[in-house]
Amino acid sequence: MSDASGITDVTIIGGGPTGLFAAFYAGLRGVSCRIVDALPQLGGQLMALYPEKYVFDVGGLPRILAKDLAKNMIEQGTQFGPEVVLGEEVQRLEPDGDHIRLVTQKGEYLTKTVVITAGKGALNPRVLECPGWNEHAGDGGGVHTHVRQPEDFRGKRVLLVGGGDSAVDWVLGLKGVASEVTLIHRRPEFRAHKASVEQMWKAAEAGEVAVKTPYEVRSIHGRAGCVAKATIYNNDTNEDVEMEVDAVVALLGFKPDLGPIGNWGLELEKNTIKVSQLMETNLPGVYAAGDVVHYPGKLELIATGYGEAAIAVNNAVHHINPKARVNPGHSTNLKIFKQDD
Ligand SMILES: Cc1cc2nc3c(=O)[nH]c(=O)nc-3n(C[C@H](O)[C@H](O)[C@H](O)COP(=O)(O)OP(=O)(O)OC[C@H]3O[C@@H](n4cnc5c(N)ncnc54)[C@H](O)[C@@H]3O)c2cc1C
Image (cartoon, rainbow, N blue to C red; front, top):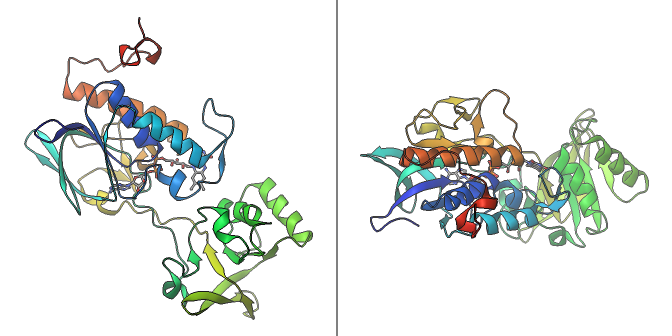
């Protein structure tokens, strides 16, 4: 929470895993904190892109659904009561005397420091640029850029498009839930994990799903505002095939786009923010962590984001109060958790 003047110690832009862990650390250090996220929910990519997938590479959790990991992270990250502002994209970041002013489409927020944990920026999935896509976008239209939950597709004829992990995983995830699952990809090779691709081909041989390459979508057609048919074409022979479908799901990844963040005067490299070992950006009081940052050796993983969040927040605390140590100590010994030295 901010003080009576509305000024927060640390404002975190982005409520994904890195931002939530940053909020946890702000609480642990006893500073006031606000999280701002453009999406209507916390959890970042885990909730927006792959809630039903298992994550295996977070320390201490051998296997956990992304949505359950997000739930745990939200519980941990909000336990000290940060102010949570959802559905607001930070559009401007500018110095304001000793403070920093953040401007969203709905309001303005003053803060002493900022930790940018904006991931890939606003999550803009790639869509199909074919006739019929835009007409059927939106609730109930039948075109999608991700599978939120398999049950949404129960009993439906689903056309999946893509060649990466999401596409192949959802062929397997929707098998037995959707009445028909067809995957098309513009190349014969799939970029997905080898074991999943093998599983997919086995399911195709067993007639449980259909996989067609090298195919692309030419057009989507509907009835009463809902998808009813798709025309796909073989990009070798140019031959068209018409398919009756109830849903088209394009799993084509994301356009890396920092959006407004690119205009804040930050030093960027490859569409990410350059940071020091202390997770400082080139702007005083502005730190960054998680997928949004670049430094030599950077890995875009949840585990990496956690460590970077801890470094960013502890250095932000020291920036606000130079007498405060950077090192937070061990949680096992902290009074805030009612532990003794
Ligand atoms: C299909 C898939 C599977 C994956 N599997 C794994 C895995 O098994 N293990 C693993 O370690 N990693 C995995 N990842 C990667 C992992 O999800 C990311 O590394 C992680 O989400 C990065 O966290 P983050 O908090 O830095 O960013 P994000 O999760 O991207 O969160 C950033 C948040 O910032 C918000 N935001 C952006 N710009 C603004 C703005 N201007 N104003 C307000 N809010 C803003 C966004 O809305 C978003 O909620 C996977 C990714 C995908 C797509």
